[in-house]
Image (cartoon, rainbow, N blue to C red; front, side):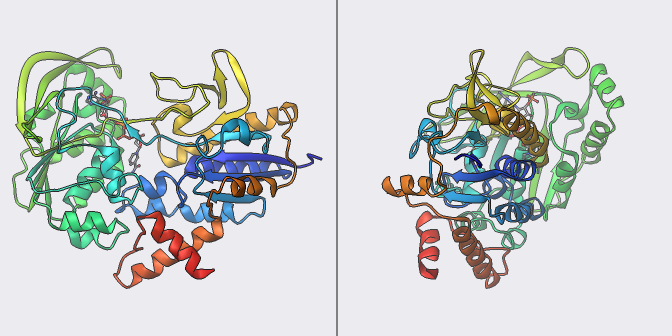
Length: 451
Ligand code: NAP
């Protein structure tokens, strides 16, 4: 008994797949079952990455390779923590890795945030990416001006999707529902507003450069926005990538309106109140200055208040993890507390429970950063494995019996590939990369049709 090790991974995004890969490569006696609460896999690769960034989505081909290993199984549509508890799962597995990411936006915490016309970036991203929770979001783009708060890459993604011409978007795998709304969109101006200065924006260099390629859209920056204090000049001097980013901003200072739409970058403004009677009509900002040492500058309010009239406010100020049933949670960081991937409660390690990805380290980093992150977790897990409490169930089929006894309709990776192929096939008729299914019902119909 127990000559095989068995590990359950919760979540099928990049950190989940990278963990599976490390486990399968590093421990030949290890079998991996991956659980996903939705039917379709890949987490933020499918439901977070912007549809006009197909190269990033292509990493799913590497995940297909990992999934083709006979020691790997996929259970889609199983909500661990709800359908099956972590404690129950531990009867079937020697160890469990939580790779469930973060999908909730941080809130601004200012008055007016719940007015119609105010959205979180995560809801807009989910809306255009067929995320089951957000795909039916009521978005009407009948106003001309949107303000996006935050200067991270997600803000750029949202700004691009709201401004890109339909002729460019319609070839992507964007949701059909979103494309209909975007076709009718009246948006002309987007303001991307940062609380710190141009040298502190968190944009990735190539993501910022890509803004220039959005069709029929001007980038406009008032030169007064680009005045840098001495500390910021020091920061730039030491960082060529930062220098190139600031140079990019300078390139568009004094630019004038020539095209159908405009994106404005505005710096050193903190949102203090969203205005409107019944829906968003504007937003108030306090002008900031920066204080602090090199790379540690923080905002200090100047007391100068400004208003931008607008129809929409989209807050894109970072993500937050959700509490996972039965596990500790760090309210401040929005993560599951851990020591190098081993989940801890206070100072005590919880045996056999691990984390990887954003839920381990917080919402920072690109997809590739999850590879070394998951390697650290997997190495620690493999080191612990011989000493962990033994699972009760030995047969690989026992977990399927449990799922059936609970009437849980789960799908396999082969089932997912039928959905995947069907999306690609129906996309061909429309000249799209793929034509996505936005509902579980549609996906389940495809599987049952082919059986
Ligand atoms: P982010 O990079 O952490 O940026 C968040 C922005 O929000 C920062 O400008 C931050 O300003 C600002 N902010 C935070 N709290 C605020 C507040 N209360 N009021 C006003 N502004 C506030 O977050 P993200 O854009 O969600 O991206 C998350 C991660 O995903 C990042 O690592 C990003 O690079 C990655 N990502 C990558 C890609 C890509 O490679 N294509 C695409 C999307 C996302 P401060 O700097 O002052 O805190």
